[in-house]
Amino acid sequence: MSNREIAMLLKNVAAAYAIKNEQKYRFQIIAYQKAADAIESSTSEVGDLIQDNKLNTLSGVGSSIQASLQELIKTGKVKHFQEIMEDVPKAVFPLLNIPSFGPKKAYKLVTHFKLNNDKTVIEDIEKIARTGKIADLEGFGEKSQSEIVKAIAEFHSGTTKNVRMVLPFAQELAEKIITYLKQSPDVLEAYPLGSLRRQKSTIGDVDIAVATNKSQAVIEHFVNYPYKERVLEKGTVTAGLLVSGGKHIDLMVQPPDRFGSLLQHSTGSKQHNIHLREYALKKGLSLSERGIKKLDAKTDTIEKFKTEEAFYNALGLDWMPPEIREDTGEIEAALSHTLPKLVELSDIKGDFHLHSSFPIEPSHDMGKDTMEIMIEKAKKLGYKYLGFSEHNPSLSKHTKEQIYSILAKRREKIEHLNMVQKSVRVFSLLETDILPNGSLAIDDKAAAYLDATLVSIHSVFGMDKKTMTKRVLTGLSHPKAKILTHPTGRLLNQRNGYELNWEEVFLFCKEQSKAVEINAFPNRLDLPDELVREALKYGVKFFIDTDSHAVEQMDMMRYGVSVAQRGWATKDDIMNTLEYNVLAEWFKK
DNA sequence: GCCGTTTTCGGCCCGACTGTTTTCAGTCG
Image (cartoon, protein in one colour):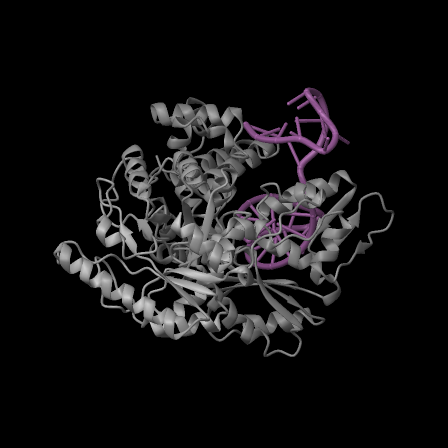
C-alpha cells in the first residue's frame, strides 16, 4: 500500500469521525489529518519504516496510529478503522476528493439521494445536480448546485492535469501574475509566498501577498487578470483565481504596516504556523496575518508589524529562512538563538556536473554547448573552478582502445583549456554508470585519464533495496569514484526513485570520504531535502551541481542551494564552497 | 489521538470566504 493510499485512508477516518460527531471527536479528527499529512509527505514508504523499526520517527503519528498501521501492512485492514467507518456509506469517500466537498456536504447528499455505489457516485451527483434536485435540499440552493457541477468538471479535468508544479514553472507563473499586479499603482509590494517561497521541491498552488492601502482596488485588479479561467473567490482581503492547467492562484492583501505578519502567515508552513501559534498562546498571545493580539487585554488592539523580522523578534525568536519553516526544530532553534547559518548561492565556487558537447559518444544524452562556452558562463557566475562530467563513452559501440583514445583526447583538451585561461580551473571528470553488478562502465586504464568520476545508476532500476544498495556501494568503492550523483534516481512527477538503505550509504560515504550530490536540476532535486538533513547527522559532505546539458541550465544552481538549505546544510557541509587547492587535494585522495 | 526546557494530564491556530441564512455552517489554506 502506497503512502498516498494510506494517507487517503487516514483522511477518510477523520471524515468518518466528523460525520459521526464533529464536536466529540474534534481532536481525533485533527490527529488523523495530521498523521495523514505526515505520511503523505514522508520520503520513506510506511512499509519500509515498519521494517526498519522507524515508524515512530514520523511526527504526528503516535503509538495508537502506529499500531493501526502495523495491522494495516500485515493484514491489509484495520479493525478499529472499520468500526469507525462502518456507519458511513462508502459512497461518501470518493466525493471528498472534489474541491468544496467536505464530510458534511458529501454525507448529506449521499444519504438524501440514497447513493450506494462508490464507483459511480461522482457521476450520480453530477446527474442529480443537472436535474435541479439539489437546489431544493435544505442548506443548498441554485448557486451551490451549479458550483457542484463546476467543481466536478474541474475535478475531472484535474485528474489528468493536476500534477504539482516543478519550481521554475511555479516561479514563472508567479512572476507573470506579479508583473500584472504591479501594473496597479496601488500595489506597493508583491511577493510569492507559501511553498514557493519555502522552495519546496514541487508546488501545488501559487500564493501571492500584496502590501497596499487600497485593498479593494487591488482585489478588483487581481480578479481581472486577463488569463484567468475563472474567479474562485473574492473577498475584502483575499481572492482566488483558477488559471489554465487547473492551477490556483491565491492572493492575500494587507496594509504596509501589517505586511510583516502577512508574510509570516502566508509563507507557512501550516505546521510551522500552528506550532508558533501554540507557543504564543502559552505566552498569552494570539497570532494571525493581522498581527499579534494580547489575550488578557481589555481592548482588541493588535500590535502591527511592518517586517517579518520584527514579528518573529516580538515573540523572542530570531528570523529564520523560509526554507526551514517546516516545524522540524526551527522554532526551538530560533528561540535559543542557535539557528544554523545556511549555505548561500554566493558561497558556491564551482559546478561539477556539466555535460558539454565534447564528442565523447556517450551511453546517454550529450550536452549541447562547448566546453569553452560553459567556461565563459562559469566566469560570469563568479566560479573559481568547474568539472566536466559527460556520460562515459558507450560500452556497446566502442572497443576498449577506442574508449581510451576518446578519453585521452578529452584529457588533452581539458589540459589545453587550463593552459589558455587561468581564472576557472577545469577538472577532468566523468559521469560513469554503475552497472547492475556494481562495476563501473570504465576500466582502470580509462579511469586514469580522469581526476575523478561521478557515479550513478542509469539502468535496471527495479532491483530490491538490498541488492541496489550493494550495487551502489560497490560502484562507489572504486578509488576514482568520489561523488554519488542523483542518488535516488527520482524524476519529479515522472517516477519515484529506487530504494536504498540510506543508513548504510551515509555511513559508507562518511567512512570512505565519498561525497553525495545535491542535483539542482528542477525535476530531480536529488538528494531530496529530508535525506540531506538525515545525511548531515552522519557527517556526509555534499556537492551541489546542476547536471547542465546546456549552458543556460547552469543558472539552476540556486534550486540545489535551496534543497541544501531545506536540509539545514551550512557552507562547511558543501564541498564546492572550498578553495581550489583543497578540492584538488581531496579528489586525489 | 498526539505531545511535552512551564505538563505523562490537559491542553490542542486562526481567520477568510461562500451560500444560505437572519447569525451560521461548511470548507479552505
